[in-house]
Amino acid sequence: MSQALQPILPDLVARLEHTQLLAMSAASIDRFLAAKRRLEIKGRTGTKPGTLLKHQIPV
Image (cartoon, helix red, strand yellow):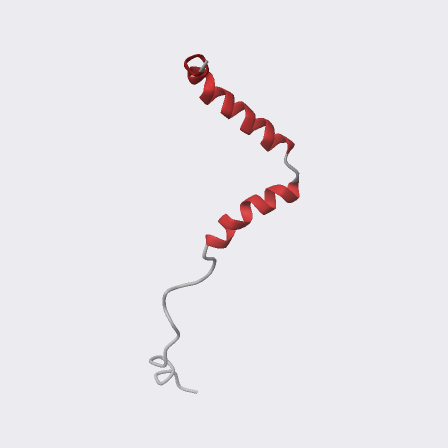
């Protein structure tokens, strides 16, 4: 049986995943993507504010 199932398995898995994705609610999609969103770093740079320019700017 496994020899007959093996060639169609990739197509079968793709269709099942597609069907599950279509049936998924918006809230479930948000929960599913939450982990990926946490990994993104938004608006952060590697530099820190310094005082080098503060002394050069006349007030």
